[in-house]
Image 1 (cartoon, each protein chain N blue to C red):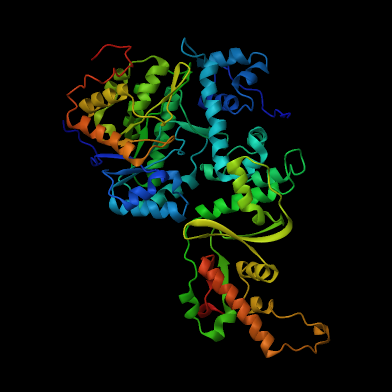
Image 2 (image 1 turned 30 degrees about the vertical axis):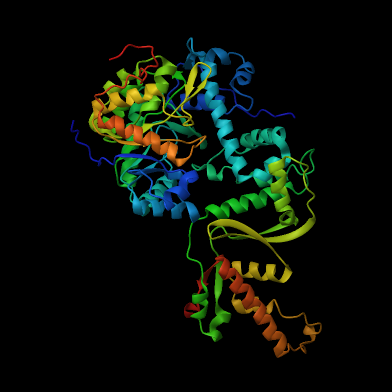
Length: 293
Length: 308
């Protein structure tokens, strides 16, 4: 299925983590592209910057931020935008992404991805800010759906409608995190396939895959474990709907050896070869709560 | 250990909250120092107000859901501070370190987009607690050195002066040279000889054994980055003073003069510096300059070609 997108298909990659720097630089990792956390390299020199530039020489690279705070009611941080633009000009990423969330308010930063209430007010607020950010950076950006653990009573629409309308209203891309819709579906009791079906395919620039952890009855998006079977199945369904999409495997805690992360990358690539084939070993995308599509 | 609660009353529960109001209400609860449950107990109507803001279900209550964020807020920043201050945290031990971080975040919540800067006020915060139970008098110096090394490790790149730069300057113009420190390079003046105990403090961190003795100072310490790694070196009196002058952009000729021997009758105007003494002072200054250039800590602020 051909979907017209403004960004190239980069294949299958992994998040660039310092635990793997040496192996990546000294070896020939089986990886189509890397994703770097923007803030780890903004206004930073030394070894981190050297590694990033060396990786960029050999591989396509995308930048993924965690501090844009696009949904905050605080003013946009112009210093942050200047630093991000400077980094993007230095390393020429294929694209830049961040999260559809807020990270702080009142001048303070939680360094966490806090979900927004899905209201018309929040929608208008985010759309206007994405447009200003894209102007400031001189490029369109992609926004990632975050996992969430709390539900605002003020919400006026489901998350998937909010996400799709942000992308359309701001004319930006989406970084579709498959694990996050699995986690949020589990935590809030919705069918992630409903979410999937509401996302316009041409807006999806990239996919994230990761593993969650359990806390009581909730799932947390901790990126500290292998991708779950249910998420692989949801990924297959996403590819059926979206067509080929550049995919990144993320690990941020309990980071395993590079070979282990690359093995998951390989698995993603194999699924993408035949998204129409459902593995009998794969779980239900809803963790067994909902029947097959 | 008592913790003072400076939190304003949460505004949750107002049915007319706009986006800013919702964010403010959530924020006040997730940064509560003793968790969401304690914060909800402390004010009348807070629990009802939370129920009006957030929904719970059979999986988890609204309070439990919010508590996920409260925990992530605190423990993510605590982990970042432990990366920046590993020895300080080890000396304090888990309980005191946990309470220190709690108090610190109440006084100095993160205001920068990067976690890298969240600990910038911690050395002063530790220093202000010097002498309290569990806070050795040198702990402020230790945290200051840890912070400076982290800053050196991550500092932005800048072109440093090289031996080739120096060689390109005619000898008669060297006196006009001026320098400045590259980003991340700095001199610390510490009251305690923390550098002497640096390795022992690292061993203590790994073993959890007794805290080592730290000798009384003072010590002037050069902190810098060399071949990608952060480093420090204690400097002796003359070299320390001259290095400070170089960092301040003083003419190299002035720096050379600091190495001249003291002359008792200089006030009489009759003193003379022997050629041998002047040559020795110059040689010492040049040796220091070359060693600093080799470490990559100086940039040329005024090449000889621009002197005047």
